[in-house]
Image (cartoon, rainbow, N blue to C red; front, side, top):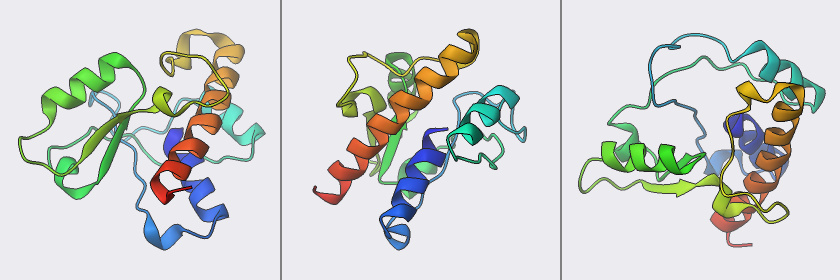
Length: 138
């Protein structure tokens, strides 16, 4: 979901040629599957349409991308442990970009019902806007 929100913000600011945005997970058990139906439904209520299919993060992602963003402390630790020495990617935690919410992480919405999905979307809209400002020097 974060990549969909971030990509839309990039496009809305006319910065599409400056960014390549992708999404990957830490596990491969859902590889090739669409995002959870509930997430897609809630996203569409906010004007976001999730069309990508799941894929696991690959070692070459750390040399291809400048930034890899994790949602919580456990994700960050896992990403850092996967990161090859000398790779160019900086691993960032999404919650560190929150401006209007006091959260330590972006939680997994899948166990919080409708309210959990809405909360995560609110957090991601906040953090993605701040992340984009950070990356563009605003």
